[in-house]
Image (cartoon, rainbow, N blue to C red; front, top):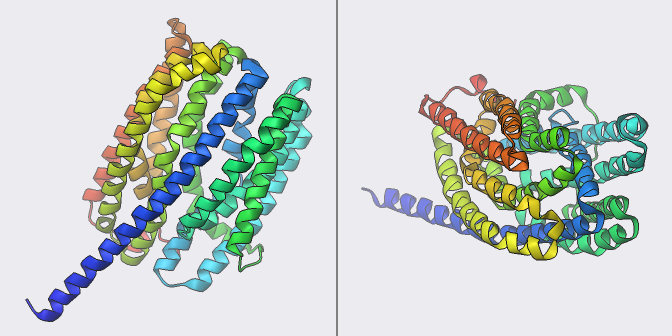
Amino acid sequence: MSIAASLSKLELLRMERLRASKLFREFVLFGSSTILYQASRFIVLLVVASIVGPRDFGIWNLLNLVLVYGAYAPLGVGNGMNRDVPLFKGRGNVNKVREVRSVSAGFIGLSTMIIAACLVLIAPFVVDSSTVLALRLVSGLFLVFQLYNFCQIYLVSDSRFDQMSYQQIAFAVLLPAVAIPLAYKWKLNGFIVGQGFAYLAAALFMAKMVGFNFKPHLDWPEVRRLIRVGLPIAAVGLSYGLLTTVDRWVVQKYLGTTQLGYYSLTIVVGSVVTMLPKVLSDQIYPRMAETYGNTSDYRSLKRWIVGQIISTGAVLSLVVMVAFFALPPLVRVALPAYQPGILPMRISLIGFLFLPLAGAFGNFLNTVSKQMYYLAVQLFAIPLEIILSILLIRLGMGIEGVALAMAITSFLYCFALFLVGMRMLRQHPLPCAEVGCAE
């Protein structure tokens, strides 16, 4: 082997080690800030649950779906930005990156204002009179949440996770300082307003930190292109949102609002426990897209897939074990009214253990524009979870049956995505035109 070739290999090895070291340092900072962020949210939710009681906390978990589903109102433009920015960076097209950001900001802003205005107008017709004000306040919360979400997409697509870490720390401090006092004063409505203040302050902090170098505008041909790229990804996201929230609709319909309040333990713990794996997924996704932008080769993504499964599996197993044993005593002491929700919470935790497979292969399918396979698996899982939930309720298992249905569905969903992803990886790499690369 020539001296030049040996030096080249050593240089590649050194660069690979530097990348791994940077990713690890980034994960430590971002992971630590996410733990603080989720601990803050978890404590706030527990305190608010105690203040407002099971019934009103159940109502909040329904109103919160405006944020969950409303994130997809821009028809996938944000998702298109999240994929295209790293992809065009990988191709060295700086002007296209700036255009994608500008058009995304303009369309997301317009669609968000339209949705918020519609919520204000239809509130008296879709909820009872005691909840109209709460829904209208949620429409304002939705506005600032979308601003916050856009800033996060900007940072994630640019792999600026250090700055996201500072933003999460700021939000973790702000949320309890504002939301808890307002919840004590105005109950559920105060809690909604408090969250709005915290999201707005965090979004403004991010905007100042980022220093956006573009102006939002609307370019309809580019909007349509971003929708073509992002809508399949958004459809997957919306479908996943339905998959992870359909349980609360079933509980509300068949068991009532108070039982939904008890089941809120499962909802809250699930959102917290799965956040750390999401941190890893968010860090790996733009890197996967940039790698694919460079190579257009499925094989170049294998190391990201394997790395994500191993790292998220290790983190999630530890978090689930701690939550399984530590949270029940805490609930019995701090939230005795919610004790009926302990067993469903524990059952659901077992179902979360399989999520690393879904996260890794989901990122892969989104990157190579094979979202229809991803969506097909979800569209199989959603009715399965509904049918299992209703069947187990009919058998007298109550909210424990709903949690068991969710855990079974989670396993089948993750295993199916694993099979689909492995089948894709065995195929020969396809030309860019065939896998729908952005132009």
